[in-house]
Image 1 (tube, rainbow, N blue to C red):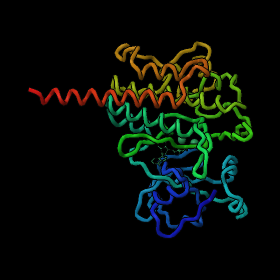
Image 2 (cartoon, protein in one colour):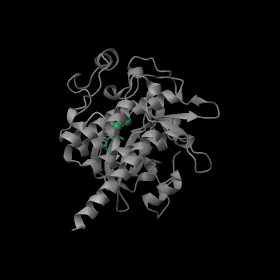
Image 3 (tube, rainbow, N blue to C red):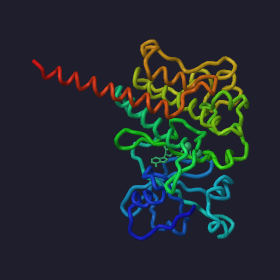
Image 4 (cartoon, rainbow, N blue to C red):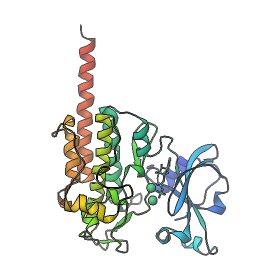
Length: 321
Ligand code: ADP
Ligand code: MG
Ligand code: MG
């Protein structure tokens, strides 16, 4: 729903009030209301809109501008009051600006140790678990599946933790009717990150669980990207040696469904490393066998605790004579 900007609140305060979660949910406003926003530079251009770094009352914000006429799906989110204003309306989607940019860019520009890797992976799992879970009550939220999880749609916060972005293809689960609120359009998303059942169209498109399982497959690939960069200092995108850039459905289907190939785990990682196990269980060819986001979140939390404890012991040993 479109939200009017009140006079003197910071963006964070407003986001807290509107989303009730403090999770950085975006504000959607009309161009006419958004006159106080100064666009600084374009940081991303997609098919349906463009993302800018912008200034709003001295704060950096990110603004995604849509032309409502260009993406029908937006009408599902937009209040009726915006529709009547003419043949087209520009919509501003305002969110916190993250200087580190997307996880994809962050992986290109930095190297990581085990700690950084866990922080990134765990925070993505937390975000996905929150998204997938229905929360009841006045400050509740529906269960949502993302359907376009990839490192370019994950943003990195100042502290090195991540948050999910670009919910343009997301679908909502309506628990009262046990239905998914989307017209069944199956092969949506980024082909390279598409789960096998999406590629070969065997997915049950009326099942919300199926979309969540699809997210977990894509998450597994993201985890591999992060782990690979950490372990061998090299950035890679999934299936880069097997399919061309901008692969077709058939390119992907041959590799992922027919040959059942998955990204390579170099020996150096160790096949029984916990993170390796997690990613392999996420990209299983059997959607029902994949880990849930909540399961991954718990496993990575534990791993983080163990790492912290081990480091503490090491530090103590170091000061002991
Ligand atoms: P699209 O639907 O066109 O892919 P996204 O929402 O994914 O749009 O944004 C495109 C790119 O813009 C992202 O991959 C990221 O690099 C950058 N971007 C988006 N939102 C932000 C933000 N809040 N802070 C910093 N960079 C962002
Ligand atoms: Mg995107
Ligand atoms: Mg998008």
